[in-house]
Image (tube, rainbow, N blue to C red; front, side, top):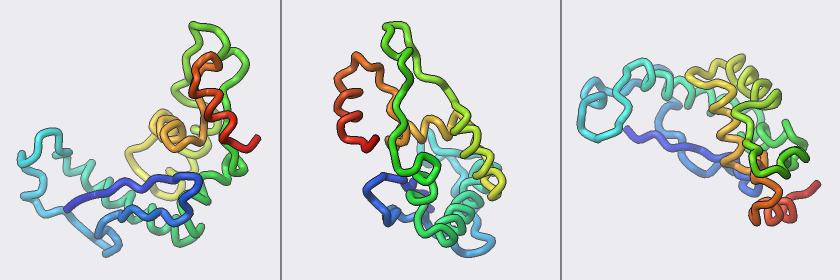
Length: 150
């Protein structure tokens, strides 16, 4: 059984990547699926069950809200958040989590999601462009700032 990640790309309202076959209540990965067939494969039964469970929660959230993208971007009113003025210094580092990632993680947990926390949510926020953590002196900061509505 293959599990696919669904991204909340700002310009993709359809969440087009398949979630897999977790729509069936009680979906389970066969015991042999937890073997040593693939290096780096998740073998923990609890983690695999949590992936299936979270996929079901994701599908429920998407049914309720239309798209995961719409739900997620509502936290920022559809705008990319940019790092603060202190990012001008050479020793600035991006935070591991923020109040917003805490709030999103809490909301996902209240919807039944497992094996996730604020740090994971913040990394996801960075990867989908919800937050721009490039330092102001980085060429990508300006490019992203110009592509984003303020």
